[in-house]
Image (tube, rainbow, N blue to C red; front, side, top):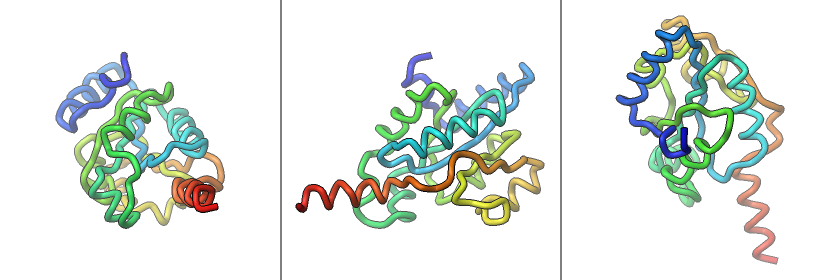
Length: 162
């Protein structure tokens, strides 16, 4: 499947995941902003992929990222971020979402596993109550949080100011 074909609307993705379930495949949902990709993102998504057969990545819309990260973010528009994430080998499908968390997507897509990075604990996952109610297992995956887009942006700004 080519990169752009992996990026689906929520409606098309829900239908595709129905087909995947009928084949007996376990679905994992990971999410994030993915503003300036770095090795922490790669390790997170590769870790998420190990939790099931199909990896869906939900990418924050520009408005939801700005709400969470502040003015000046995102650096890249949602369409570009979605395409970069879709280009990763570990990723099967990508969807852009408007909310600040993926609670509604968990309701709609009903994955088997909700994967979060190591900056979370099971107790601190924002969608924990929704996942528990729906019987979705939460998995903390990836390497220790030593990488961030914010740090990368700051290093770039400092290098250009020098």
